[in-house]
Image (cartoon, rainbow, N blue to C red):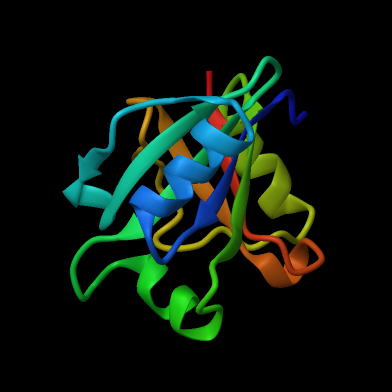
Amino acid sequence: MIGRLNHVAVAVPDLDKATAVYRDILGAKVSAPLAQPAHGVTVVFVELPNTKIELLLPMGDQSPIKAFLERNPAGGIHHLCYEVNDILAARDALKAKGLRVLGNGEPKIGAHDMPVLFLHPKDLNGCLVELQQI
Ligand code: CO
C-alpha cells in the first residue's frame, strides 16, 4: 500500500534561520522559499539523497501550521508523507480499515502538484500522515 517516504514536514518559527541551519551547518541542498497561499505556508525544500525535508512557515491567520507552532514554539515535525500509486484506492482501502481521512475526504492538489490527503494522527500513533499520489 504505502510506498516511499516522500518528505518529512517540519514547522519552523523562522524560515531563514532554519534554512541556514540545513544549508550552512548540515550541508544540505536547499531550495528558495516558495509561497503556497492555497496551503497557508511558505516552504523551503531540503533535498536529501533519499527523501526531502519540507520546512514550513505559516502564512496568514488561517494557516494550519499556526496553531501547531503556538503549541510547539521551537518548531517540530508536523507530518510524514508517504507515496501511493492510486490515492482514491488507498483512501477507500484505509477508510474500510477504520482510518479517518481529514477534511471532506477528497484529495487536494499538494505542494508538488499531485493529489494529497491527510490521515488523522490519532489513528497513526500521533503522527499526521499525508498520502501523495505519484
Ligand atoms: Co507535506
